[in-house]
Length: 386
Image (tube, rainbow, N blue to C red; front, top):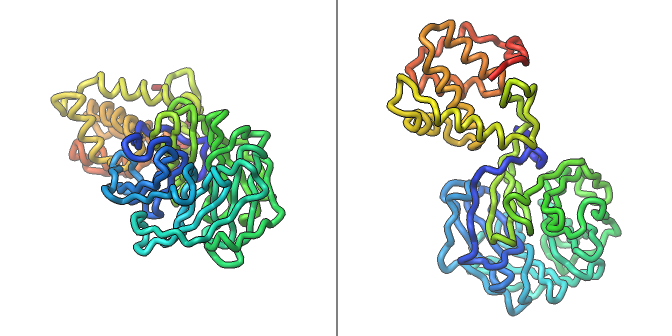
């Protein structure tokens, strides 16, 4: 996997609709441990709270009944919602007043305990404010809007107090990539910036130096999310940089992606290496192959697939089907030499050696003698045909 590289993002077939709570969602945020999610409902003038029973797995999200915060007294069109790193402060962009509002939470990460601090700031640099982000220590604030297509940087003389924000006279023009920028997100060390654009339906990636937005340079890396939603409104990346989440305004749904390295798996005998743009084809072809074939060890391909999924639990769904295909081929062999050929072939294709061993041992009671496995998978070469 390649952490923080959105160009490698693969849709995980995981999504969660917020239409029941959070209609017209225009912003979202996750607790740093991935167990809580917050949605700003533009139609409801309310911030909604959800729990994830499995951290960073959007399929396990459920609404926390009673955990909401009506913000209509401050602004009736909330957009991006953000939190202090310890969950004791909440902020949102109010588009009616072009203003950022600040709240205190008496119980960390419980939005129902939020109380307006009577602190806010009107942004003069942008007349149509949309998105908001903070430096991880609360000493910097960043905003973006759709009139100027520019990110502006501010210093907060009092950490996490937006009323003390002063413009740093530093900005980044995004118009070369973004004609209608929406969500704004930063890597927690201030070296990466991500912007969602709902005109091009993509997430764009930039590099910068130590939270200085004026140094931001487009990396020529992006992720088109139009297959999931044509009006993306916000994005969020897990702290390990391996999970990308996109809020879709049009579908009122949160979508989850895995950030993986450019694959080296072969999808057919005519292709040297997979390109990110045809990963979906390789995924579907391999899945179909695994489901179609049967083995002498299992009553059906479905039984085989279910057992592999248990063993490789936690892997991106894209990769699971490659391990299923490995197991199907491995099950048809009878000698150590044949086992070794299959094992090394799939290892050379890029599958993890430890996971391959877990599958082989877990399914077939294989002795796990790897004395015949090459230390360097490259010895198998790149000409490995399906």
